[in-house]
Length: 508
Image 1 (cartoon, rainbow, N blue to C red):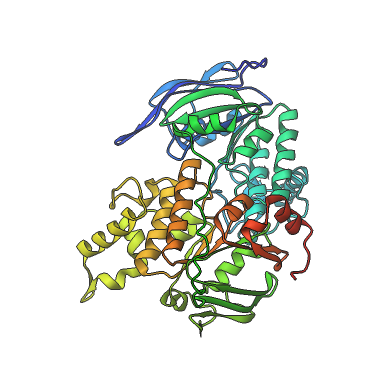
Image 2 (cartoon, helix red, strand yellow; image 1 turned 120 degrees about the vertical axis):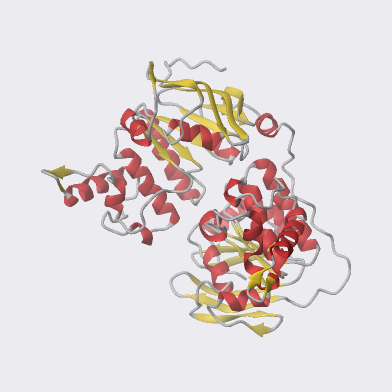
C-alpha cells in the first residue's frame, strides 16, 4: 500500500458482509486520510455499494471493524454516521421532489426556535451553501422536482455540507453532469480537500480518477485486490486488469464496410421536429442497420429529442414518420405499436420495475401475446423472456430473480430484451452505459452493433464523446437545442466534437 504521511481519518479493517447466497464483502480493508481524494474502483457487483452502505450506517457488517479518527466506532444507523461527519452522495439521489431546495438541504436538522422551524434562516443558509458550490442561481425556495439532474446533484452536495462533514462519499457524482459541471465539481472537491475534508470518490470514468484522485483502492468479487495505488501514475491497463481479472481492450466493434447494395428505405424520418424551450428544428433520416449518435452537452436537447420522437413529450412543431406513415404526436402507445423502443437515461426510475422479476420486466410491453381469456400464460411468458435474455447473454440466467439484483449492465440488457421481444425496429438509447462498468460496456457495445447488423435502427445519446464516435456510424452534434454539425463518425474526433458543442457553428 502506498504510504500517506497523514494519519488516517478512516480505517476499515477486515469488513465482511453476506446476504442470502451472496458474500458481498470478504475481508475488505480501506484507509482514507484527511484532505485526500481516495478513489474506489470495481465492476458492478464488486462490493462498492455494499461497502459504502456499511460506511453510511445503512448496512451492519458481519465482521471487521471501523476506526474513525483513531477511535473504534459502530455505525449503527445513517444518523450515527452523519453525527461523526460522514456524508454520502448516492448515485440515485435521495431528494424529496415535493419539498423546496432549502427544505431538502436541512431535512432532519432544520433550524428551529422553541420548536418552530425558521424557514427564512434555512433559505439564507442554503443560499450561502449554493454560492459556495458555484450555483448561486438556484433558488432555495424552488421545488426540487422542477430542477435538472445536474442541479439536483448540487442540492445533494449542499445537504452534505449542511452538516459538519469530515468525509464525503461521492458515488458516480459526475454521471449526470456536462463537462462544465464536472469542472465545477472538481473545483468543489479541491476546495473541500484544501479544508481537510476527505473524499471517497467512486466513478467508472477512469480519466476522472487520474485527474482528481490521490490514491486508488480496487475491489473485485468483494475483496480489495489493490489498495493505495497512486491515481496519477498507475497505468490504466493495470487498473482495468485488476477490476476485471483480465485485460479488456478499449475497442469498439468494427463497423461494417460498404457492401455495394443500395441503401434501404428509411425506417424513421423526423421532419422539422421542435419543442419550444427545449430544442429547435430537428430533421433525421434513419435507415435499418444504421446507428446515429447525438452528441452534445447536458441541456443541449439530446434526451428531449429522443423522448419527443418516442411520444413521451408532445412537439410544438414537426412530425415523426415510421415507414413513411406519420405517428400521432405525443403518443407513446402509437410509437410502440409502430416499432419504437426507448431505453431511458434514468434506467431504474423510468425503465425498470425494480421489484418485479427479470421475466416480467422483459415481457411487460408484450403481455398481450401471452394473454389467454384474460389470464397470463406464465409458461409462455417465461419461455419468451428467457429466449430474449439468452440472446443478449444476460447474467445471471435466473429469469425469476428480481431485476433490482442485477448489475447495471445486465439491467440494461433486460431493457433491450424487452424491446427485442416486442419486435422493435427503432431503438432509442439514452446514456446506455451510465453506471455500467468497463467490462460490461464492451459487452453492450457488441450487443448494440450486432443488433444493428441484424437490421435494427439505433438512435444513440451519450455524454461520453468517445462512446458516440466509437459506436455510431453517423453523428449529429447539438448545441443549445439545434444541430450544428453532421458527419460520419470516422470523420470526427473528440476534440472537434468538443469544439463544436462549446462554440458551435450553423450546420452546412
